[in-house]
Image (tube, rainbow, N blue to C red):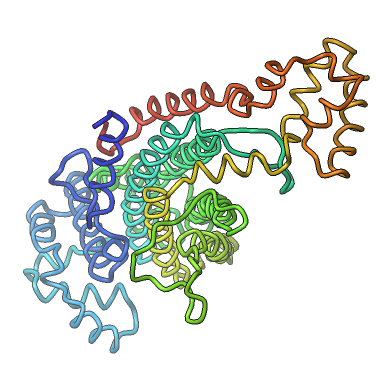
Amino acid sequence: MSAIRKLVATTILLCFSGTSALASSSDPVPAMSAIFSPENETQKVLDIEAALASAQADLGIIPRWAASELKAKASTQYVSQEDLAAEYSVVRHRMVALLNVWQRSLKPEAAEYMHFGATTVDIYDTALALQLAESSHALIIQLRALEAIMIRLANEHKGTVMVGRTLGQHALPITFGKKVSTWLGENRRNIERLKEVRGRILRSAILKGAVGSYVGLGDNGIELERAFAKHLGLQTPYPDDWHGARDVFAEYAYTLGLISKSYGRIGNELFLLQMTDIGETEEVRSRTAVGSSTMPHKKNPSKSEALIFYSRSIPRTAEIIADDMINVFERDNTSRTNRLFADISIEAEDMLRDAAGLLDNLQVNAAAMSDNLGKTRGMILSQRVTFALADKIGKTTANSRMHDLAVEATAEGISLRQAIERSAELAQYFSGRELNALFDSSTYIGLAREQVEAVIAYCQSARKHDLPVKQD
């Protein structure tokens, strides 16, 4: 097995077999549905309460024994979703409901110190930050798996010649690997974007009190907030009261929207390349899949079509999330937006899974690509012939003469080579061997091979700096 195929096989196994491995195989990344489950949110809130108590004990604000009791009981085994739902139906407040249920398992004297000086929005903002740290991590791993697939695909087809199209028209020859390398480079930039926003999420623990001025948290509130974040494994929090701004959370959503546009582009290209009239690629479908109830010959592209849809739906959800950046005064955002983070993250996970299934099983029809290169009867190589003529009759004259010749050949339904050979003016400049060379598409792809290799090398180098995911 080649190094690239081994890279792809290992990464796919890690990312799409139910859970994905991190730096340690004992540290799995859960699915998005688990990250944003009510159980996980409750556990995050309990973790946060334990971190708050531990930080307060470190600073002598509450007794160490109380913090130890709170930390020992910070588990959903003491706060079931059934009990939480029942209590919420009574008090109609998510934080109060959780605290009321939780304190039933605590020693009464320790319960006096739970949620000491904190406010609900800080706790749930930090819980969301922890969930987004997990989800962004999981998405980075999926994007890296796709990167490995694209590296393999680009490398295998760096010399597979096909039509390069501009404005829907045949332009010049390229290679399929060159096309894939553009997807590969864009995917790498998306990985870097998501890593950057994840870095800001890791600074988004918040513990600033009811109006964001640390009132209720004591004179050492700033120090307490930093210690609180450290106990959660997060980085030094932003000093501003960002609760009403929501810009980091909006950036996460917009980053997923941007990623969806990238995959929408890939899906759209492969959707078109699978058209009966082009036939250069094909999605692998199960033998039992039915294309149409009345037209059994159809092989409808499903995953590429799905990518197009995701590129429409994910950005719309991101827009709603970003609307929550406009709030009233200090801290009156609406927590109803939070549920959309589950929606957009789960949809992004589904999108990347579909993309992996599409690209890893994509059939590339090199024969159809070769046939399509000949559809313009050599016109796709007119630029090359013009350059060859320019050395003999001058560039301006060559451009003019080749334009006239192309119009003439098209009108008469003959190839560009035939038009040259029957032109007394131009035929004198070329031997049969020279024309054979000029009309060989495989030798007119510029630096496509080198370009593919450069993109692959860039991505493989960048992968070494991705963390905290498993290295190659």
